[in-house]
Length: 163
Image (tube, rainbow, N blue to C red):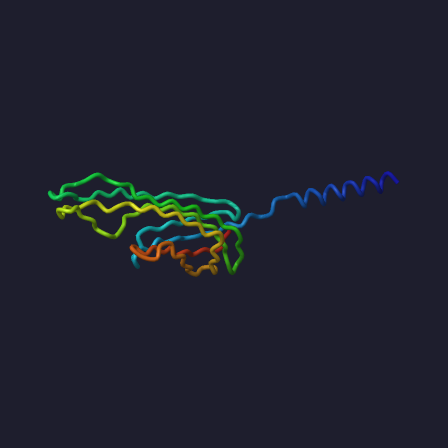
């Protein structure tokens, strides 16, 4: 009797150990292009495990000539921070959560009452997409700002090759 109890314990321990082994984590390769008024102005890419997140920040420091003497003015750091998190992935489709913070210049040129140039004003935009569905290997778009300027994210993603 004790032999059959021992066999039962060993079998259940073996099955429990197999059930607790971690499943293979899916890795998603993704690309994101930032398109302003029809022109690509920035790009991000990476490989991220489903359920994890990756955050990247790109900076662009700009300076403008301002005033009636058209002299160089102060500079501003235009930044773009994106957090990409694959939520689900299979051979046909990837679902991504995307969080974005953008600082960019307004398109409108401003002047003083006497006609002297003022620097463009920085504009900050925050956007969040809780589940952008992307067909594997195809581009999907997400409109961030409609106009002045138009800002669109183009996203492509698929499961990473494990070869």
